[in-house]
Amino acid sequence: MKTLKKLLEERPRAPLSVSPDDSVFTALELMAKHDIGALLVMSGNQLVGIFSERDYARKIILLGKSSKDTHVREIMTEKVLYARPEQTTDQAMALMTDKHIRHLPVLDSTQKVVGMVSIGDLVRETISEQAFLIKQLEQYIAG
Image 1 (spheres, helix red, strand yellow):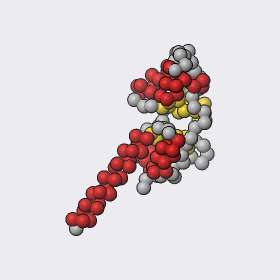
Image 2: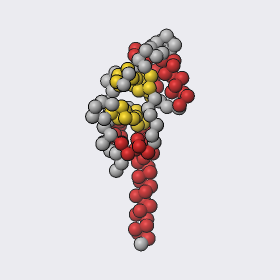
Image 3: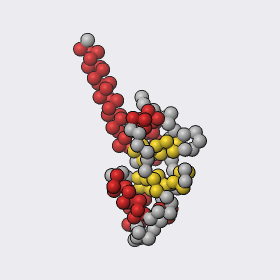
Image 4: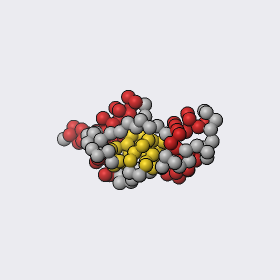
């Protein structure tokens, strides 16, 4: 079973982020440009929140606000669940499933962001691991 550290090392792309003072519109443009569903909200090197499509749908559209006139800080999720690099992909998936979230920052012991995983990342990894195990079993059986 793979750790989040190993998974993140295999795709060394730094997670994208915005400032709490950026407009929601700016955040949405960044998400659209990179085809992602969430951004970390950083104040300097400190994680202060996460901004997701869900935040936008529930706190802008449903409340009739303007994405150009609203700052990320006004609608971001401030209580951010996170994982540690040494946790396994299965542990992260269990947490995400239990809490109904699709994006999970990964923070080290000093609270420094080392990456972010999505539920899609974890599902792809699970499928890959299962395919590998099936191939190994088939080779064993074929003998």
